Image (cartoon, rainbow, N blue to C red):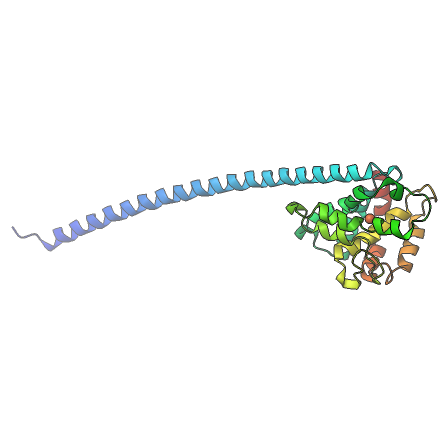
Length: 250
Ligand SMILES: [Fe+2]
């Protein structure tokens, strides 16, 4: 018996509807699968973030422990490294450095004098002026420090601060006699922060300067010891911030 065109069409429509329903079921299944993947990814990302925060916290604690070990020998500087790190971060911010890209810079501020572990007490604590030979030993500490941290990947850019924190803008610093912009910017920022802390802290041989006196001395040394642009950024740093760091990290 001949099949009518209508029946043929109806059969085709049913076929197509069945096919459509099948595709819709498959699409819904895929969507559910994708949602599961997305949820898994979100979970993994969250775990990864908390792991990396935990790791960074551990790095920071390790660096602080190391910095304290270095400072424990030197009773009069107190928490110098912590204060310098705090000044340095504010100054780097005022200068417009993108610190987020190089979080290791703070580690460098904290560990700048790590190499002093290799300087004998007789030289480190000598009350009078150093002989030429003693000065050579003393001036090795940035080299020793950068060697100590050489293979520690997470310290990365911290090494620049450790190696170059005694360089001077005019080229008269050490150990590499770098000049101007040859000196890594993190070390140029550090130099100002370090001097600010040295001047505003009591030492056995002199009383602490006021912030105003310290500002004047640092400004006078712009272009000689310090990068003039970093000094400009330092001028923008309010007294209140410096005072708060001094009080909080006494
Ligand atoms: Fe130093």
